[in-house]
Structures are given as structure tokens and as C-alpha cells.
Length: 281
Image (cartoon, helix red, strand yellow):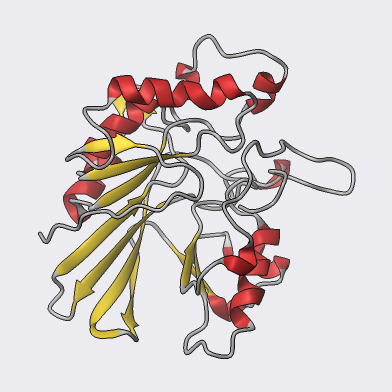
């Protein structure tokens, strides 16, 4: 998401980002795959995706085209925006796909489309007409031994009407442990206009079905068996500095350690690069 606004049209601009992107799209390294969690504007920015695609396709040195991995029903959004249909792969929950790595012929990269708890829609008429997902990304040897494993939770809640959502424990049992998990700790652009007006929700538990709180995110990380976790989805579209900082303060109270510690959970600055330790299973 490199655009200035979460949504922009000829007659209306949505929430403006608080934090600038870490770089220009043209400065990005070669990208082989882009995984999309769902079609909400702040997660599926067509302007950004088309520019990434055009930049990638213009490089004559590429041996394989950039591929976009999306949940069911999202392919049409990308294709109608200008991305070639042959570069978009649509997947259902629990489906997986493997690719050989040209740089390491004895290693495969595997993408698994996994469930999460959210919703979808870009207008009133397409509410929940497409799927939302989290993603598992693993590198495996030809003998199917997992070398490294990453979990991207997408945009998700954790609570149900009767307790925690059991799907995350199922993901952890099937694909975990994960070397690193990227987990949302806030509601992102949702209701951030309240912060711009100087208001704040006194109780956000009614949002817990679709947006994990910092406390829920820590438990979600344990359910998926993450060795290290990074926070996301909390500051770029926040309506105020207070709203951007609150989830970090709550995360610090809820976690057992920072991201570099075993079972720790932390946050990075925009543009910051870190090295994550990899443990063989």
C-alpha cells in the first residue's frame, strides 16, 4: 500500500496515511510473489499493485513473471485494474501451491491459503462476495523437509461469540511452528476518523470478531506456534498519535518478550530491516 489515501476517487478521498512509505515502488528489489489477504482498499490498493506489476514486467532480466496470489473472488479486482490475468493465481482456504526456486533447484517455495476471521467488500453491493485469508509461506527441500516458515495473518479478528477462534490453533498444528509471524494488533483504517475528530472508543471488544486487539494478537501468536512475531496494521492509518501509540503500549504489557526473544512479540519502524533466526524443525 503505497498510495497517499486508503481510498481515493474523483469526488472523495478516504483516510490519509500518517506515515510515509519506506521507499518508492521503483526502489523495491525484484519481487517474485505478492500475496493479498482480501479486497479492502487499505489491503488491495490497485494503483500500487499495477505499478509493482508494470515495474516488474519491464525488467528484461526476469526469467519468471511476477505472480499475485489472492483468495477466491479477488482475481477479478486485479484483472479489471490492469494486471494480466495470467499473473494472478486465485486460491481457496487450505489450498497450497509450490514453485521451484531458480537459485536453488533442490528447494521449493510453498504458499498455503489459510483461513482467518474477517470480511470483504469494496462497495455496498459486494459485501462478503469474495474470500479473505491469511497466508503460510514455507521453503521446503525436495524431500519435503521444511527449511523456513512464515505466517502472515492478514486482517483478522480472534474472538467469537463463545471464545477464541479455533482456526489459528489448527493452522499452527498443520503448518507450525513458524520462524516468524506477522500479526495485526489494531483495527487499521477502520473507525480511524474518530481519532481525527479527537474521539476514542471506550471499549473495542465489539470489534474483536474482525480485528485482533494487542492482547488477542499475543494469544494468536501462541496458537499458531510462532517463535517470533511482528506487529502490523496499527499506525499508518491511525487517526491520531494517541491511537497509533496505544496498541504498542498494550502489546508491551501483554507480551512475554520482544520479537527477537523466544516466543517474543514486537514492532519495527517503517523501513527497518532485521535478521530473523531460522530454526530447523
